[in-house]
Length: 77
Image (cartoon, rainbow, N blue to C red; front, side, top):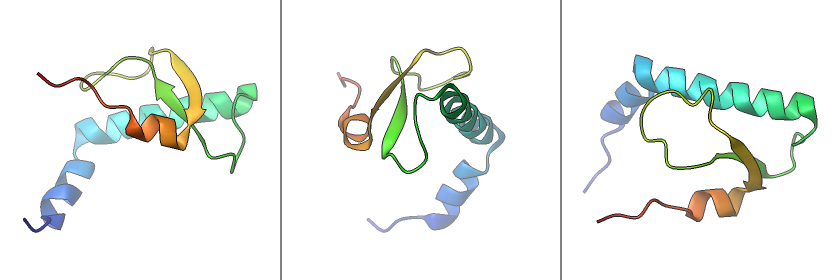
């Protein structure tokens, strides 16, 4: 099945997704300021738990490797 780039772009620019991206960026900026991560260290902030919807602002974060953060997936029934 071919990718629908127009649909992906529409999703990325939706108000809901923009707010979630801003929250992820704020969390990363706070971790940089606190010295938990550094620019170019190939680490990411993992929002603990699976937060598919809603705000990410008050969610606890853990510094993990990029690989560890990308392979972790929620259990599907």
